[in-house]
Image 1 (cartoon, rainbow, N blue to C red):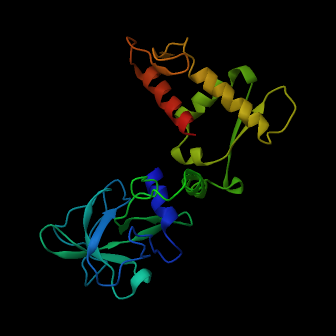
Image 2: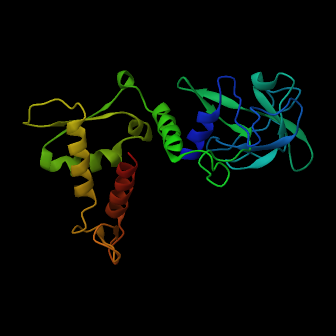
Length: 248
C-alpha cells in the first residue's frame, strides 16, 4: 500500500510527521484532524483515557481512512496514544503505532497531504518523489538472510511455474527476493538471470494470443481482459496470479 508506506516514510525516529505548513508535529494539546492510516481486520479499538487497558464501552471500531479530531498529550512525540474525540462527544485513546516484525506500523497520524500530491507540493521534483517511493518499498522488503523464494524450473516453463507460485504463496513471500534457477543451465542468478526470467514471465502470463488476454483496440502494446469467456475458478486464479506477479 503506497499511501501506508509513504506515511511510514515520513515518520521520524520519534514519530514526528511533516506538516503542510512546515511544522514537524502539532503542539501538545492542540486538537487537529487525525486519520486512521492502518488497522486490523476488525478495525482499531478505542480505550478508556483513565485505563488504556480497558476498551471504551459503545465506542465504534475505527476503520482505515476514518478522520476524527485528536490531540497529543504533554509528552509530545513520545506519546504512545492519541486522545480522540468521537462523534458522540466522548473522548478516548487510540494507539499511534505498533511494532510488527521489528518495524513500526503507523496506525493513527495527523492528516497531511500525500507526499506525491503535485497540487500540494509543486516544488518537489519527480526524481525525489521516485526516490521516496523506492525507499519506502525497500523498507518493506524481507532481507535475504530472513528468507527468500527459489524458483527452479526449465526456461520454457518459467511463466507457468511463476503463476503457480503466485497463486499458492502467502502475501509475505512477495516481499522476499525471488531467485531463479533454470534447470540444466549452469549459472548463478546475480541479476541478469532474474531480468530474463521476469521478461519471460511477462511474455508468458500476458500472452495476447492466450485465453485470458487480448490486444486492446488503441495500439499493439496494450492488452485487456478477453471478453466472452467462462469466468470459472481457474480464470479467477489466473487473473489473481497475474495481478500479484505484475505487482511483484
